[in-house]
Image 1 (cartoon, rainbow, N blue to C red):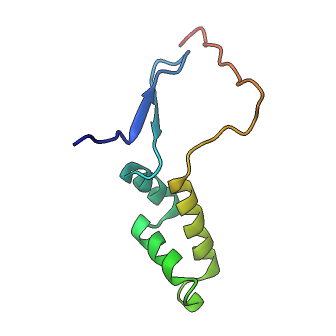
Image 2 (image 1 turned 30 degrees about the horizontal axis):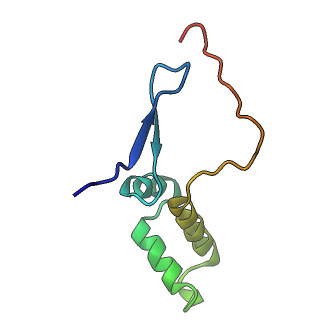
Length: 94
């Protein structure tokens, strides 16, 4: 059974250490977001399911936070500009 890697390591020019990116919809992304949002993926799914039916169960602020968590969990970065990317020039001491 083939498994997809949840992280990607990229060697960025001018840096000694590789840059690690986390892919969306993975347990690693859920763990990463749990730290910032203070709620687990299971709690977010519960809030998003229960709030529209019974608004008195969850405050609106918590519902907004859950929506933001889910959008961050499922989305991947997409460039929005058609201008060329900024080029990093290596630091002479790195």
